[in-house]
Length: 141
Length: 224
Image (cartoon, rainbow over all chains, first blue to last red; front, top):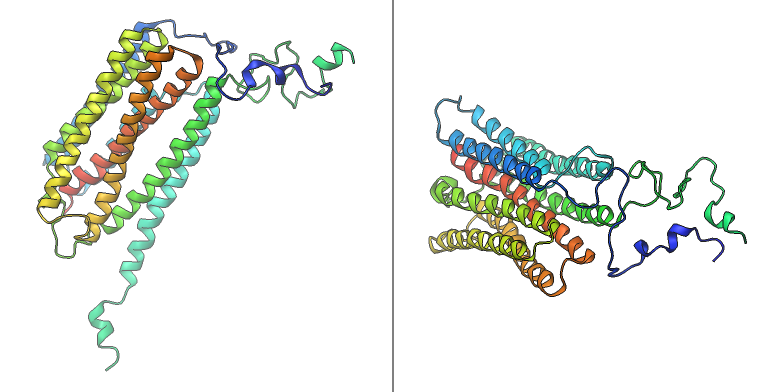
């Protein structure tokens, strides 16, 4: 017992379903205080998402964008909308208590990007360098 | 042993938890000093790690789809199959569901049983409408002979979109559980933590769907 520090015996660290309140964190209110501001935040996120979604479907049918550029426009719109969701709905912020979440997100994006772009890159080169089947069948003659 | 030694283990450079304050907390919590973060932060972080692993799994399915999208074996392609009006309706359902789920989390913050149940019910109904539209689309594909066994493109398509649909189905079950728990047990801390995880899950599913409707459906009808 003599080696334990006081905070390791506090009720916040018990396993299972401890029923109690979160301890207030320095600088953070224990409960949301301004409901109207939070609703406005969600509404703003919803509005931007609707605009970006409409832009995505619009870009598919328009002739105003240079054809090969539409693909890039769709990718940019998708990434923008994912960012909007992260900020307004998932509340990923730059606050100190979010540092770990942001770092984990950065690592996740790195791995996902490696998987997607790495696969496309490798498979495109593989297809490009593969001997066509008709050439392969004539090699034995 | 004196209480002085209990309270302040030798740590002159504040490398361990605790620091100088009596509760082991300081305003620097989150910067690596000042003791463990509140349980809400830790629970959210743990579930966030799970969501990111799920995102990585979906990125592998996206990569598979992108590689196989032209492997149609003479079968139908995105132009013959995809109906963007159906996709737009699905997108609207899921986006609205995600928004109402945010409203539910605000209702939980206000400890309003009535609005929590209403918001969660609407969230679930919109999610169910999304699933119904998706199921109708899949059934239409299979009826036209474009099932998952038809070509590599369709295998990858059904795996990617179907896996998202399975996630939404699991989310609906979880949502019903949350409604029952809020109803029966009230706004206890551990129930609110579960709901925090659920709302993260539900919003993350909408993020995955953004990738699917943009890069699979819309782009499929744009590319030759």
